[in-house]
Length: 353
Image (tube, rainbow, N blue to C red; front, side, top):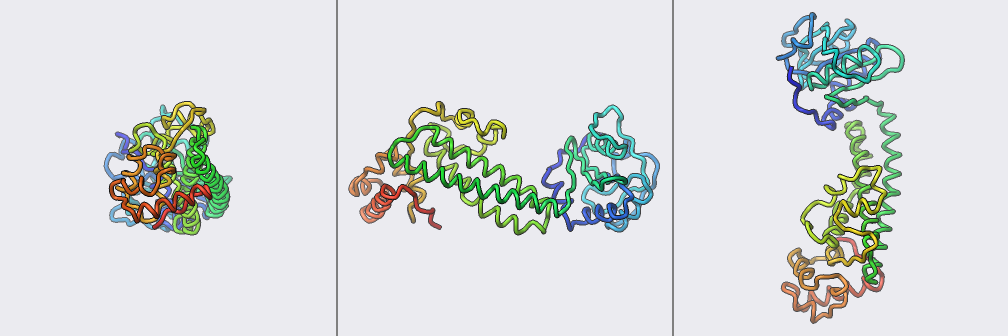
């Protein structure tokens, strides 16, 4: 059998989230402690890995039916979309030469079966600690209890909140340094490092939310609030300081840095193309202008193109500003007032809706 197309990990978690038909079947099997081995695959090309058992016709999937069939202590085949039960009481015979890191017979078979077919395989333990695992390709996903997921999700939210505050501190510090024109690459990279950490922890929370299904709504709302504006902030900083390729995604570059190396400032600097961390750096003013209420995007671009650097923009008079295409006298006065307050307080205003 030719391995099927790669399985999306998040899709696996969604399909087995609490409250779904597949998860309901898992819960029933765990309660009756019969164990199970279930292959989610199309009807064709099954003979290479299946022996014996019987075929079912028009057998609609239900958690109760799966739980009853699991009592026969043999394999079950259901359709890839989990709408039908295709075979029952099957003996699975994947290639024994395929590697497996599992110990129990059922889980070793499941891992090899997933590797050979490329289809998801559910294995539920029969003895000892109640465990349900989905194998897909070379990946392994243990189905954790909602209580465990909620505890981990809430812990991650606390960590995410702390990291978000540290990111805000880094942004405020960078703004003050920009106003004083004493920024180094190290200061810029510090902010990007913290933004990357927030983003990655947010990804972990998202995975937990998906694992929880509908029960993860509250965690999802809190995480979304903490992640709001992080990607935009990092991209604005990248646009401000990048010498080239400003149209690229900064997170696409940061994602190439392993988590174990994300603390290394020079490594992160190299990943985003900033060079030596001790070098002086000057922003173009994109981040500061992004927070000017009501300023159209073409005007922001015209201002950064005209003044080249934020220090020059910061020193511009109303007359200097008014000369830029699209600004005009009234807008120049408002912009000058904003820049004065920025110089006085060293903290940018929130981005206007």
